[in-house]
Image (tube, rainbow, N blue to C red; front, side, top):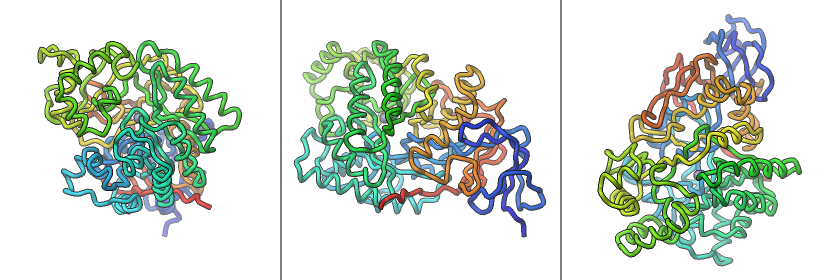
Length: 531
Ligand SMILES: [Zn+2]
């Protein structure tokens, strides 16, 4: 009998707290770190020699969209290979449950790939969804949020109607059910249908519903362009009025007229945090964002969901109106984007367009850009993804450097080789270290690791993850500081990073000498904070 199941010896520990690195061995029994110190190798079943390597807590991706992806690729290769051991899904207002007669058509479009693979969506309610996630064998831990957009559409459909008192009660009931089933909070997507139709008061009421559970309110805000500061104030109002902990998702200033706004946004957030409000944010280390192609269109065209949208796009007078609105208010509601800044990341029907800008495509087809996007959305039935090159590198650095900002990829588990997705799906966490710690010295290594581990863990009240400490779960990432590097690019995104040597999830080795072992050691984590 050995004292430990696994010893990691001779490593340089960066423990996730932000404290300076130190040399020590780590002893693990079953799924738990039990000892940190000078350990004899004779005492373990298995020994990893981490000489000259950094030993850190497994990375927690606080902003992830693998709602479908985790079922399609449960080994979560593009995340595990980055050193990520926990994914927080259900973001930007969308969770795959609850499904009702009111939203089933919209959900079928949203969960298309799941339907293609399994023929059916094996849940309706949020508890049933949690059961399916729990039973799924997967390589990473999963944390779920309940999507406000999903809940709203479950009661009201995807239209612009305002909830009656009774509707709101029903929405609150569904959110509470999800929290009781173990969700960690509520997410909103206030640029998407139907979240964009929600008024502030509705969001306050929904946030109040999760307050007794100590859930977080994670928000993709209404405007990340010239309206950024108004959006920050709306978010703070919701936080103060409901008493919930606020997470601003993928904080950015997008579109040239809004560059620099992030400075004020960060100082406002800081100010409220200093006054004792629980508010923080996350960001990814790239100057481009990614979303659905349909998100560029004015809200009135998208009202009712993707099927209605496609119907409207058949009407040439509507296309004219869209063009006029773009001229008047900019593409994507005052984001002031240019067509050459918008690149197709994924198209179901037009693979040849992946990697090309809307400007190029319009030229190629000899039609105007609005007609081009209408055609692509229609033929893809809404499944088109885009990358938008609209941020400034200075703003990205300002957000990343701020102590209240965690690292969140905003990506999802991918099928290897499919489309030209944003490189953040493969490179976010290694890139923060190679680009912003090692190369630009924007952050110290312990601070960067803190932003990937204990900062999100504390936010989520995951009290046994995010630090290397006795009693904590053995989620551990071991990497070479000198060679760690993201290799995914916009041109060639499906590239795993270099320098991640070992990834351990719940005490099980999931990456060994840089290779995925295919071990499915991940768990569905449930919040248990009620009462
Ligand atoms: Zn979002």
